[in-house]
Length: 298
Image 1 (cartoon, one colour):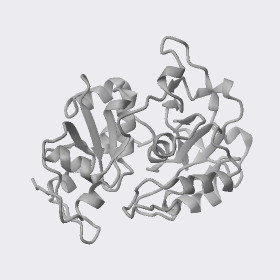
Image 2: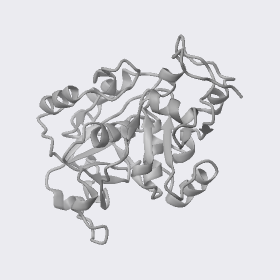
Image 3: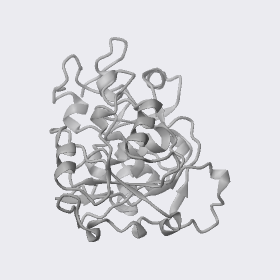
């Protein structure tokens, strides 16, 4: 079983606190880092906790998105500040603890967890993800050599305060009506986007939002899903769908708000200003089930 980690790291402080012309501090200068396993699998939601109990990186904590609680009622809406506090207390962490996220091969929640910590609850410490597809988890608690090397996480980039890193249904409706200007990027598979593939959730219509563009999230991942494609390839992929230049807003949506975070993070990787990008929190699970939303097929 491989553990994978993402190559982008960001600091939880305003842009004004650091000069973009300076060399960013390396992870080795941050002191103690806490590794957090975020493994979650869409078709087997109990597998993550089960795998963590059987095989994990030594000393790692576990963040289970299915057990975090979603106060707004949508499938994967951001957990509440109280849930965040409980996570810290359970794992003996503080709001300023530097955190490095990782996941098992095929996991899908690392980027979602990254967005939740960084933008949802504004974790004060460094939050990053590390990408190392060849690193094997240890047996049980594992051995020290099985811990991914935090020294290779990379440069740290300051967070920019944005117009809203996640948006609600009302905002997306205003985009559809032409009252707000934004590009809606739907990262579900093509079949679900066109409506040819019916939604698995009861009461959720098939199709997409008027004016939305389709970019299935696997297109931004390496073939083994162990990480994001390189910047050159991502630029090519996005160039077919998303306007990378300029200052236009980009709303990323998916089935329930999880995989949208993969594409939103990939946009950061290619250098799109973080102030331009937001995730639609309720995504299709909310939009497709609502009576006051417009759905188109084809």
